[in-house]
Length: 386
Image 1 (tube, rainbow, N blue to C red):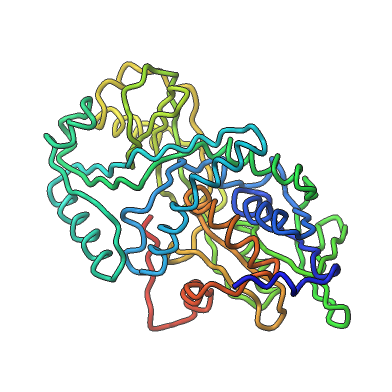
Image 2: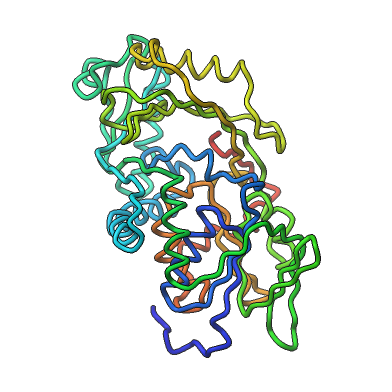
């Protein structure tokens, strides 16, 4: 429920730590709602997940153990087209959204059967994600160049893809046009709360201080250390993903898949790996070779394509892979937000989280499931799906 009468002038000052897809989307939504937004961003030296995001706008297969996350993702997909249009009209930057549907591809009958069971289980929990299980001959009606190694897969008509880098550019341009302040080259190491004044202070490693009435920690891997300053538990760990991209090719892949996708410009993106390497976001020859081999097995025509780039990036993942969206009970007005689905959920982060962290809307009821304290349950075990 909207509470636009809550704001006084002083309550509008919002500081966001982190200027990647998550922080920029929240800041954009907050600025559009009337908040005075300052974003503190590490800049190009950050271990930015936005650089390595595969670009899928995806729901089918997500939320196997958490129905509220499925509903949250479905809501995000519904908001995306209008959000894309708004950003395009405001900034002239095309975020590249296309929603033709998306394919998950499997290399064994057992793998496809497991996939079908998982998708059926999601809908048995009360959500309704449309999907279809297809064999290889069915897949070839949509993906005529598919290789013999692919035995089957699943299709969801809601899925699609976008361009993460252009989305990030559009958000930053939108922030600028809305009067938000983005400060680059800032590494925040401490969060302080001035109890008498009710303000939050972000302290950088060089001693510079930024004061605001509300604060959002959207610092990716940095949340693991910063969240405790707001008395919130946020165990965020890095998982490295390596990604490859080819030269521009004639269009042949008209649907995104979980193995590769063809961009609007014609290049094909291959990804991705899931590696426990600490904070090493480099590339390795063995993983590049594995991605190439898998890509060619999926679409044999790629055997003749030239690779033009390979890179690695770190996903900020919680133990179960689901987000943390939480306001501090001890320090109201202080928020921790962590999510590795910065593209899929970009519209939700802007349109719903932006007003929420600005104090304009109530906490969405599904956020009860997204509190960090769930990881303190010693009787629970977690797997993030990567």
